[in-house]
Length: 269
Image 1 (cartoon, rainbow, N blue to C red):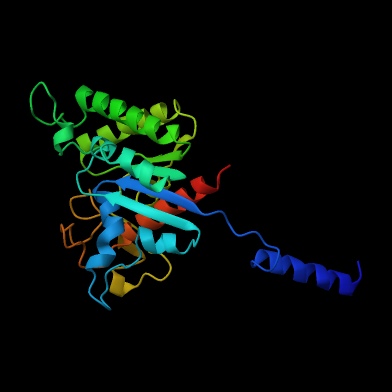
Image 2 (cartoon, rainbow, N blue to C red):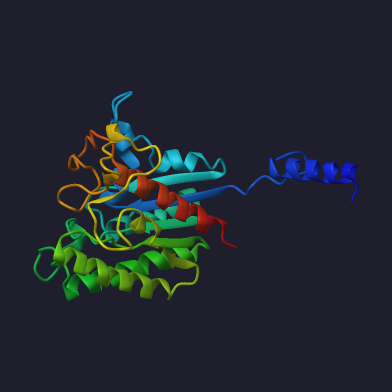
């Protein structure tokens, strides 16, 4: 190949790669994300950060906005369980016609739909009742979402420093994986959980990301990714509805990894 022809070839490739004439625009995608307090933290902190403060400002929407062809609808609220979002799902499927539906759950049992009809009280953490309830609700959720042709991706519970809650997280993780396999087009991702744990095991701190400074809380190469209780992300403790008053590396990492997993799923054939 002559030098002139090589230069012309490289120029054409560059035009196509940069969206030049003749390049196909990426297909538009719509996604709906349902979650509990972990998703709420990762999706709302930006709203409560004073201008020029040290709060983190990158949320689900900020990361999604980097992908101009992605429209993201977020449904997240502290304490929410899959049964809460089952009530919202049918309307959202009709309104938004999503290509991808994502469900993040930590295994909460605090809302009325998680009450045991026999006792009127919440199904106990790590009990047979809570596992049966989640199994049934996940089946209903996965079935409704995939029946529309949407891809379904689920983020299973992540480890905490509470023994019973972590025991439940492991068990629900198995249930999520098993039930997902029953519905074609449904997958699980541990990517968000890995971002805030030590290879799946609970940790209060991780190595600082590039750009995280002492002003953000980076000390001796480590930064907090979970709050003192070990459940949420905000180093100062989750404050509802005001959000986190300081930079939250855990929320930053969880938001970015969740959107990365969603983008990967939306690109799958």
